[in-house]
Image 1 (cartoon, rainbow, N blue to C red):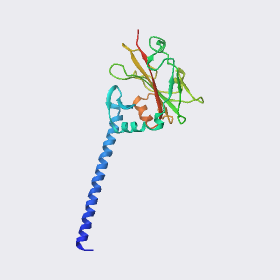
Image 2: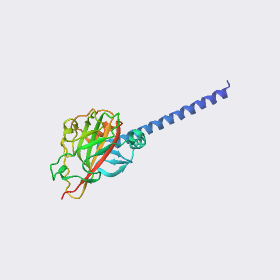
Image 3: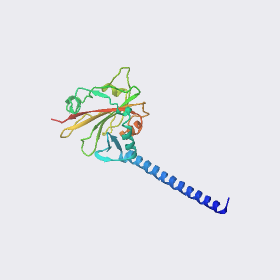
Length: 232
């Protein structure tokens, strides 16, 4: 091999190595950005949850955002397993007025929910009840995890379920259901139900942020029903 050929081969090798180093640095930068984006999306100080096609900031439902994990969630939502939606029925219609018996103007009872069309690979249910119309931020009225399934093709969630599920901490710092008691105007009370592929390793007093973290990648289906209430 001539000296010229040797030199040319060496030069090409050096250029190839420099190109590989540049690509590796670029890949590392992209990984770091995506990791930081994920931390930003799900950090306790600024918890954002993908809700439908938007990323909703917990505590401020009007604050939309963006991030890698939410983009993945949106893509994942096109899969058949995510299209499945359970049916929730109770004694008030979706976006209809709730009976006062379920509020602070009555006995404050929990409405009986009948859950149908649960995916066959579901191992547990989780329930979150929120008031997005509360002053200043979203109020959590109830957090329940590890709601067990039964041998029936449906599940009944009632006051009795509180004895067999795991309670999270509501916005009052209680392990209980906070009965609707809006100060003024009509408020929406959103019952968000999640069918999960496993029981969660979770303890009492968990926060909604912790629940969202543990549910990640385990949601087979989800559904919701909204009850309205205004004090007379």
